[in-house]
Length: 341
Image 1 (spheres, rainbow, N blue to C red):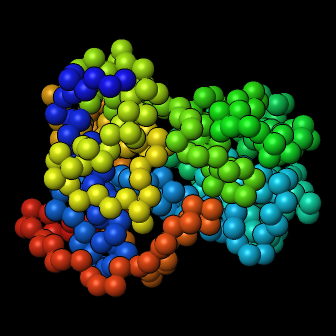
Image 2: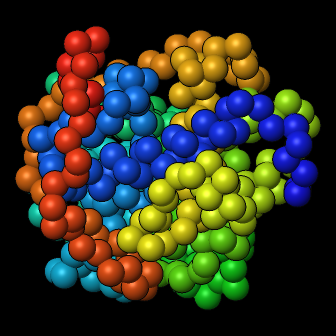
């Protein structure tokens, strides 16, 4: 796709949102106490970072689950830890399991015991799954969803999937191998492929392959008048290719993630986020979902200790915390917080 003549007003908001959300990321690193934005919609609602790998859950996955110094980098172990974490996609669930079992490892873990621990957490009223996206239950003979997911993970390892992924020829091939398993649709299989690609198990260029999820399809339908008819994959790749031109056209200062350009997975995620943002910023453009509200509100939290971001070492990013605080952002009487998670 190269013709952007059918772009709506949301198209420009896409790039402005990407720049502002990245700016907030850097401002928060410089000053965790905030405030970080004057955009009233972003200030009042939860939005992910412009870069998927910079989000809190992805950072935990990369730093603590995949690359922590005491974690084995054997393909089977990297696969097991990554999928065990991502199935639930909830930091509290991982911490709860390690409190009970110690460092999680395929060689030492009893999946039945993990299932029992999760049963107990559910009986206490605790959530074990993230609400970030719906994870269907594979039908593998168990009554509880998590028990079926653990059985799926065991099947993958027993099938030798970690070794096959390590020998894969492309990110698409990784995706197709994962997609072959029950209960994993295209969007979820792609998310897992990207998560595994952060690790030492595989190493492919993120620009090689992308799958658009439902939220991205809605975002595309809002950015272009004929968006519902467009090839979503082609649109995402085109956005990735022309990002420098668009930021320059709009006079936006977009430095990238410590110099890293937006990748297709990031542009896909930004379409998801702009689909939500546009519900309030451009209510006249309905999209295909028909949704009019943003469910997740921002809740002010106490300032957190600054932690240096950690990204896959193979990306070779030079990560430095900002040395000075950002320019002062004035609070307004209409929205005194002006903060963002």
